[in-house]
Length: 418
Image 1 (tube, rainbow, N blue to C red):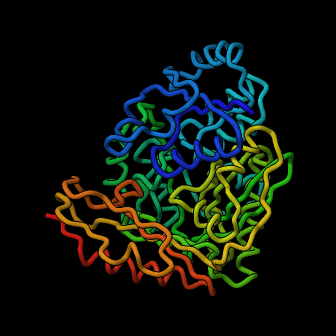
Image 2 (image 1 turned 90 degrees about the vertical axis):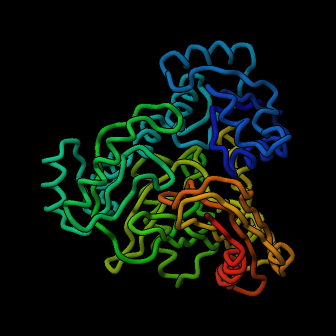
């Protein structure tokens, strides 16, 4: 039995999948957090959050890395950790530093830090010749505006250190750019109480569909678990509305996406102890890297892969965090594809009604999760405002996405927001 240290977590899917994978692997974990109530609030009424069922639950200021590292060293001397991990982007650099300090398995802290800062990722990949958009990074308005004119409208504005598509916007002119920059400046601290960097990242708007390449790195070798597709809505925001695994792509396009992702991971130095989710645009000029995320995919993409291949990326994440070779052998699950579609609100108000009706018992449905009436709703500007999802599979081919979209239409017919 191994003992893992889990430092914070997202409160969505992976906050449940990760404890399950740890326990199913025969291990135990200690959970370290600065705010227990963050997780208590996310649990269904009357239920305990899986993370709070850890062997030990310890509170500490996880935002103060300098003070945290000596504290974790003292804990390690008593509790004996075999690995350290997190599913939350905001704590990936802290975990990498902790693993290095304790002499535990994990990727180099510099590599993780560069992947978690979008501006640093751009610079590292550009220096290595990995294809991406033209970009610029500035803090002062005059330089931001000048760089935008040089790149050319339309373009994409991004914060360098936020997640889930927060404040990522398409802008078509300088007036829209100014509005986006002002909105970013008005959000100086993220949801975990960490002060944000004031830098603004501008990127060329890339054409073509977007996919993600899911990979597992161990002992210098990177294995591809597959390529997932993505649909996006909510313009001018970029809200992920659904995914299908495997992506319905020509073999050449899938191979090109995989090779581009592998090149990005190698350039960043993420070739050991990492389950990664690398986003790629298949542009008319070839694949371009959008982002590299050194943690398992969110939005239940890991579950799509498990339903189709039998490969459990949450379990692989546990394995590589312990320095162990992951089990990526595929099994016949009876499904050829699986897809998820999200219910994305387009208006603000109070959720009065949302009924799955016959969707829950429809053929090929794998999951249905919907918000409860009474919830306050705002028009989606990121991936944080979903009202639920439907997941379905296809035993015959790549028809899962069409199936999910049809099911979502049924759910939308019962949606009332006032």
